[in-house]
Image (cartoon, rainbow, N blue to C red; front, side, top):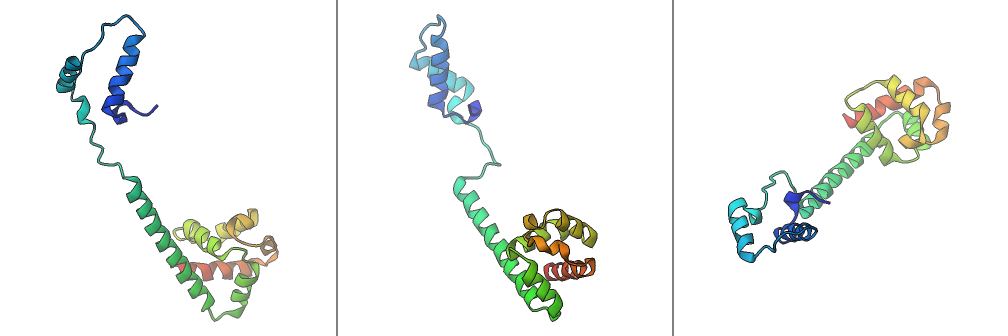
Length: 155
């Protein structure tokens, strides 16, 4: 059940009436209900300044999603404009989902620019990070180059 403060007034009164019927309570009149409302401000409701309407939340999520997509496109353009053909080849041949790679890297490695951590995470679960499974066969030096290209494209 939702919190009492969020239940509409008519439903609050109905709940009270239902509970009162379980025992031998006298009937409550409309006048008594009006008096209770006057005393306790039942119909006033609760002001919840931190609540966001569904329409507003949906709009905000859509706006944030568009920003994320635009950022991913920008990062992919930077990577594709890289002049190091070896790194481009690694990126294009070993990446399963380019958007996922950029999203995961942005989430996990933008603040912590640790190539070792990147390689360890990649070795544990390449597919979950957007890479093809065979990326684990690459030498560490090439993985570090890939890390650096991603780090430079995102920063």
